[in-house]
Length: 121
Image 1 (cartoon, helix red, strand yellow):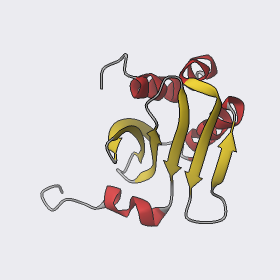
Image 2: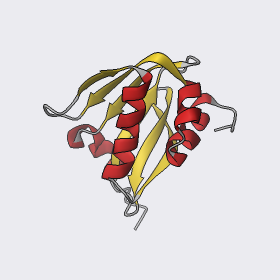
Image 3: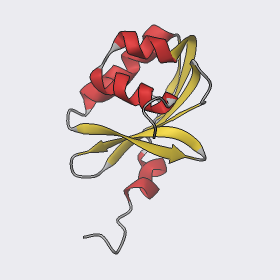
Image 4: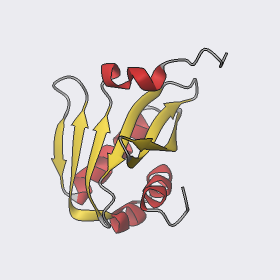
């Protein structure tokens, strides 16, 4: 992912918890849809609420690293724990500033991200 790529800028800002940089890539009316697979999911609207929610994901998993990925043909970011487990996948709409984000944290939906390939031990 080139460093000037929108997803790369989001990743760096999120990783650093840089609210100013996050604000520069997120639309003021950004929407975050969280698919947690249970009643804790839902929709958040507005840059401040979305920035807080993204920060909460990093707080929840202290050992998580953010990695650029492709999600259904879109740019995205995987939240991967030190042991390799993917605990979340964020997809973005690609428009600048970002107007919509989708975060999947539902274990059932992340199962294919966590399958071990037989050629990797």
